[in-house]
Length: 144
Image 1 (tube, helix red, strand yellow):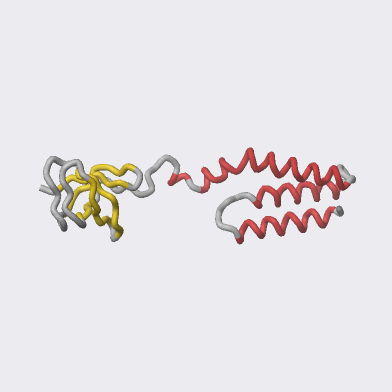
Image 2 (image 1 turned 45 degrees about the vertical axis):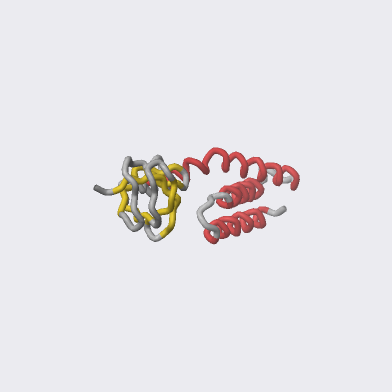
């Protein structure tokens, strides 16, 4: 393959990365294609099978080495933090819930499974404090 086809392929892959939502996969294939094109331009690789092999190896190596650091660099505010912490929010019981029993409660406009974590029963319509969340289960304690 001629050098300018590799560069054109690389630019198309880089453009494709702009059209896809934040996965950062195509960028590494685009960079590898441009590098192979530059090597073909200088005459360092002439054989088509060597160019394709080099493209494959460069793509996978750059993907393996640089994707995770790139994602961490672009999203440092999300690393190691709870995106949506529901503890201490107020939920409303949709039905009476006895102590230790499971019922339903509404939180932020959505119904949830809820366990009464307090010693007193929770009445329907009562406002409750979220103590913790386990999967899709809220652990509630009735407000005093």
